[in-house]
Image 1: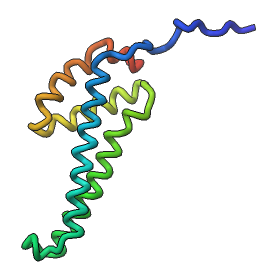
Image 2 (image 1 turned 180 degrees about the horizontal axis):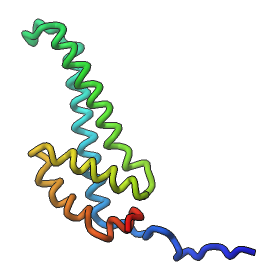
Image 3 (image 1 turned 90 degrees about the vertical axis):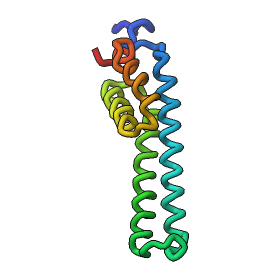
Image 4 (image 1 turned 30 degrees about the vertical axis):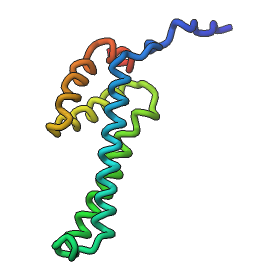
Length: 129
């Protein structure tokens, strides 16, 4: 008869590192920013181009671009809330942090987040040795 695994034999530590809380705050902030981008896209699609003194085709194209990119990036920033810790999730989250490094507005938040994200205890939590 096979023995049941001991509750202490988890492949990953059960206690999440503190950086995970800050990462979730960061992802929530990213989601909000991308929601605002979607709102801008809708605004550009609804508003008459003459009021913006833009070409109608350019205004529609910009509206669709903001709407689609906001939707895709908001969905990407919401994924970490719904997936369990796995090795590939650590890399996915690292890519989201790197995405924030491209904006000077997010640099004060993403640089410390990145420093704590690559620490061994965070890697171990996600199963990356």
